[in-house]
Amino acid sequence: MIILGIETSCDETALCIYKKNKIINKIFSQNKINNKYKGIIPEIASKYHYKKIIYLFKKIIKKSKIKIKNIKLIAYTAGPGLPNSLIIGTTLAKTLSLIYKIPSIPINHIEGHIMSIMLKKKKPKFPFISLITSGANTLLCIIKNFNKYKIIGKCLDDSAGEVFDKISKFLKLKKIGGKYISKIAKYGKINLNFPKPLIKKNNLNFSFSGLKTHIKNYINNNKINFKKKSNIALSLEECITDIFIYKIKNACKKYNINKISIVGGVSKNKKLRKKIKNLKKKKINIYLCNKKFCTDNATMIAYTASKKNIKKIKKTLKIIIKPKWKINEKF
Image (tube, rainbow, N blue to C red; front, side, top):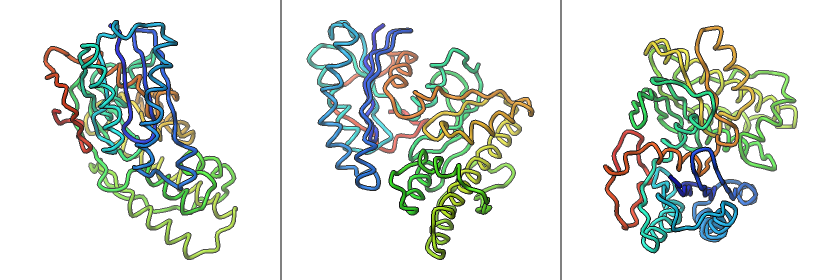
């Protein structure tokens, strides 16, 4: 079955033609725009989705050499995400659905990230635990089967990804994001031992707001040169990755599951990937998402749709989005 995937939850415009092992994936990233404005501006993000989405759609159709009428299903991200960004992708999905009589279904963005691990050759068998580290989301879930998830740990405030973005802004780096924190962390020599919130046994929730405030105060109360910037970056990476490792070990022990997948943008972090390897000594099987599918993409949306019972999904041409759609909620 040929599936068109559409992902516009935040600041990446992504489309995909998915057919078993054949994937045509196109992404327009707004990183340069975000760096210019020192962060994601929702109105600007939606503006660029509007400008680029038809262009990308034409490109994947041309490259795939597939006629639109041969597409059997359209899968689009309906939430969670920025309302104005979600509307752009949903509108394209419903327009194509109306014109070409193709059924379209909403997909949860977080569910897409969870399922991105299945795009690897080596896949975890059910049940397994998933650590989702995507943008504004940090979650721990038990993946019982396709479409069956149980949240066991959630973020109570700022996510890990948000903290990386905000600290890079506080440090006045030329570019915003965890990638650029990692670049200067390589020059760090001293671990400042930042506080690790919610490090308690049996507590699998996350909280990074206090960590963000602590680092902000440290920056404001000290003269910050490159040496101190690199030490802060190093310490931030150490702190967040240590929290992740601690939560993973506790989750596996508590639920007696020795398989864990790590997905989402922060899962690309080299320090995290290096520390994760040590968990193999604890007899925990680790599954890391392919780096090209860690950040927002439409392939994970199309793949997730391929595992749905389409007959049971209510189809409508109404443009409906759910910006705060939780993984365990029905649409």
